[in-house]
Structure formats: structure tokens, C-alpha cells
Image (cartoon, rainbow, N blue to C red):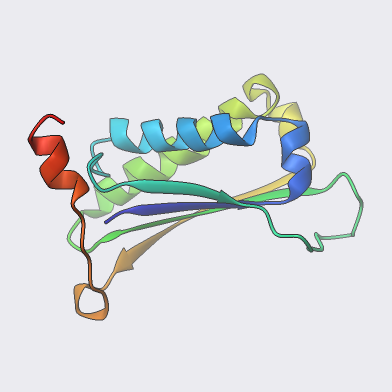
Length: 131
């Protein structure tokens, strides 16, 4: 059920590998214990067009939205948010704060309303069966 959507400007690929970023964010979320592995889906979306702040071409942005089912504690949400921020910073220019000078980073937690969704997930049964 959890979804992590990483949206970023194309030029983020100049400072990190986007596939590695997706994998790192995914495994970090699982490691927190807040997002269950059997249902987590993580993806990177790079829009074709964007404008950032003062429109300088070196400006970059990463906006992460973590969508999880309701019922987690505030501490769980903070754990996940803090872990995602830290792992993204570590991926950019070796984790140096100087590598963040031209990057706007945001991470948001959204609860999924169970009455407003339908879900069919056969992955859980396959994983439970060890296949």
C-alpha cells in the first residue's frame, strides 16, 4: 500500500544516479520499519517542464511524497520523514551540505484514506509463500 513518489528536476541526475536514488529511498523506508516491504512501491518522476525559484538553470528540486495507510503514530511519521531526508542528502554529492546549495528538497507524509481506495496486491501472498 505505501507509495513513495520522488519527483525531481532532470538536472538532479547531474549530482546523483536516479536509479540509485530510488533504490536507496526504497530500502531506507523499509529499514525504518514504518513502510512494509511487501507493499512498498517507489518511483522517480522527472517532469519535462519546470521552473524553479529565480529560474537559474543550475537550480534543482526533489519533492518526495510518502503515502501510507492511516494508523501510524506521529513518531513513526517523524522517523520515516527524517530517514528519507537524511538518505537523499547522503545521495547528493556524497552527503556534503555544500552539494545541496542549488537543491530545494521537500519530503511530505500523506495518509491514505482507506474508504477512498481499492487495492489488489498479490505480491504479499507470493512473498509469504517464499516464491
